[in-house]
Length: 247
Length: 249
Image 1: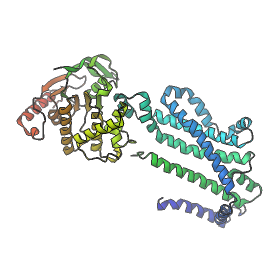
Image 2: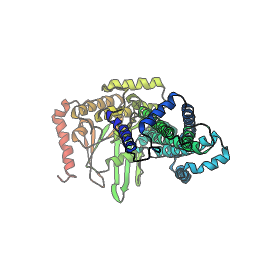
Image 3: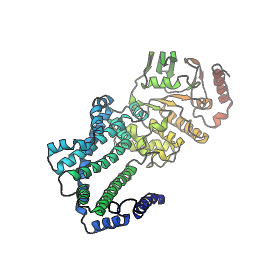
């Protein structure tokens, strides 16, 4: 992490502190950042939030894994033939453009008011992003490398394994990162509205209803940190795997 | 002398521009033939048609006993044909993996070639860590590792400084004298053509014809010393005179 990376967070907290100090917003609706941060530390230290954190994280990871296991092979398969991809492109683009949360009632009907429906809808939305990006990665592979392998007498399977798969990876990783972010969004939203007793989304809504405003902000902050750290984790993995990228 | 590649009345246009029109040529087995001609004279187009990358519009061509496993083509854009996710060693080994050779055989064959070339690389490093010239050498080794019977080379030395250029020419000759493949070499550089080739074919502008085929009797191996000889300059002058006919000079 570079030293100037710290400027952003400091600026954010500063603006927040000034706004709350000057009472630009009613103190009741916007407590100052230090109260919120203190609250967050308190929630973590007492362990009161850990159960919610882990159940949200568990749901996000599970939905992401399901999306990955189905989406990645499907994207690779569809990308191999532009004709096949074009023939199902409408379905993918249509559901990709439909807000996943709009489909939630449908998933409720199928899976009932359980964790299953939350995970399923998040997995569904993430999967589409993974399919789309992976398939595009394969389709837009540099022709020169494929050509070189063809001239060497490579079979289609060899070209796929040794060239197309690798060529698609940078785009696939973009898909994976978007997918984990979207999983988090969908899981938080579904936790807010559909019967559950645990999860960060639930906690945010509960503290809003009971006017525990600083707790609400603390949990919002926590979801932000969680999303950011997930992104950071993926970037780190990406940098390791795609060592050639940008060179 | 056996003819390995024969081309008769080949035709090819791109967007109504006739690149090849009634084009014919024959290439002898086990010789280095250089193609020398102006830009846009269809040199690369010819190699691309012969190797099946693009389709001809008319005419015929034939490469005796053509087999992908015994054929190599070093592209002009060598950089984009190397695989950055593979180590330098794995890049050179790729054609052998494609031929399903055993790990041990691959290791042995690559090491044999490394000895012949004796360029100092980090074999466990990646192509993007190499200079442009080193990448070109890597592409060269990848093409030669299968001991091809027919080898196409398009502008092989363009990214190299003069010293490495001369070294690569020396290594290519060493390789050639050991395995005597048929080599078809495109070049913009008269010195390169005369240094390496036994036959130099001078192309006209579009639509391409063969202006002249010049025999080069200089004995192999041709060293840097050979570049300074009277005979070398005679052949070079001959190629230049032939080129002058097409180049408006």
